[in-house]
Image 1 (spheres, rainbow, N blue to C red):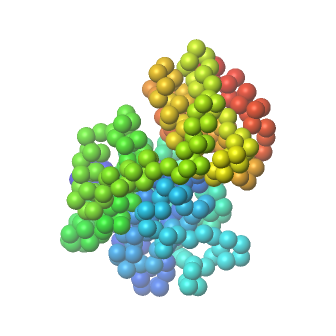
Image 2: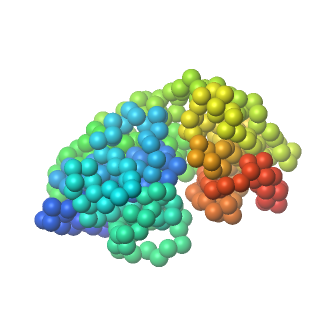
Amino acid sequence: MNEIYEEGAYRTAGNILDLASSMKENDGSVLVFIHKSVDGDCVGSGCAVAQILRRLGVTAYMAMPEPLPFSMGFLDVEDMLFYPEGDEKEVFPGGKKYSAAISVDCTEGSRMGCCGALYEMFPDSITIDHHEITELATDLKWIMPKSASACEMVYHMGLAVAEMLKVPVDQIIDTKAARCIMAGVVTDTGRFTYSNTRPETLAVAGELMKLGGDISEVCYNLFDRKKIPEFYLSNAACVGAELHFGGKMAMSVVTRDMFLKYDAGDDDIADVVSRLRDINGVELAVVLRETEDGKIRGNLRSKSSFDCSAFAGEFNGGGHKRASGFTIENGNINDIAKQILDRAETML
Ligand SMILES: [Mn+2]
């Protein structure tokens, strides 16, 4: 195991094994929490942790703040997703009450959308996260901003579990878990092209391939496969993008009307922001869109120096230095676009 992961991976594996025995003793079950505006890393790491718990004989589900995006359907994880709704919030499918929570790729209930309130009911939950956070570390929280993805942390945690139980790795990280972990590893490194990609990241991908994580299947589904409405809306959003500040910033404003015109859904412009960032000379790319539920969602990417996380923080969002996002509950998309330009001008 890569040494920078060792301490946290073994500590967290120990916590997971303790949790698993107490759940089995008390007939309890575990709910895994992830951030809203789901991506390959949070879904991949969350489902992998749920799957590892299932391998350990524990009932486990992952709480979904929104429907599973089309691109992730191939992960074959529908049977472990739990959509909290109304009064049934505290009971799993089958009537079993959940008794513990784990958060992955996210530490704060405020980032979990409709699942946040549920998460907050478990102050002593185990956490595996690679976001920069200000919260104090505890024995139960493994926070490692140096890790390119939460999935890479989950992979090392799985290795540690196997080692502690003295069983072959594939008994803990099975094909389904390996595919989920691969999803996050490729998502958060942009298929090994972002600057957070280290030699060790590629080594992990190699090990995941041996465990059944098919890298071409994962990449095709997550990045390349496009629905017809998505293809047309993405292209329209790129055509409508404008360059600002001498070409240092590219922004596309995608209104509800555009979604309706192409019969497209909320996640059908996911690749636009990285296409804008790829333009020669662009340091900051922004896609602003009106969501189905009447909010304004912003997604940001930067190439080398601009701190997207800090910028999103000013709009009550968060993320990483090179990729971040925010959601504004209500407002006019053109006014917000103007605010973003004003603010970006001072920072670029
Ligand atoms: Mn992540």
